[in-house]
Length: 198
View (spheres, rainbow, N blue to C red):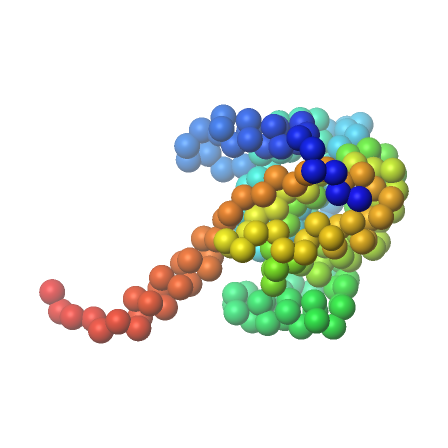
């Protein structure tokens, strides 16, 4: 069930973003492990392809006692952006839940899961369905943080509610972060125009 009410998670992210010095990069989640402060009851789990969502995850992790987990598929998505888009669309249409590289160790000890992902094809990436299907989120609080390329969150919150029906899902932090798509469009437009000598 989605609860659209203000929450401390949104305030923590906004405060962390506001206090981040210019030029400072957030710590990246360590691949394949939930590593962080011993005894933390919060885990920040993040899937990020281009790095935008990973930056937000690092900021959240630094702002509170938490462990950090990088969500990754067992088989990497293609390096090429358009090939990744095509593969993700096929997985979405076929209902595929790709295998995880690794699971969150001892998920039972966490009360709160900050769950970050980009929007792919107007919904959550298939790997997020895999993560929720393979971890019991019953009784946990899930705080989504979502990046998107200009089209909003799509059906992603319904995906979370369907795959974690017994969790308490708080209002999502949502941020437009479409650098990769804009870069691709800008370069393609530049390449398509005639080049003249100076």
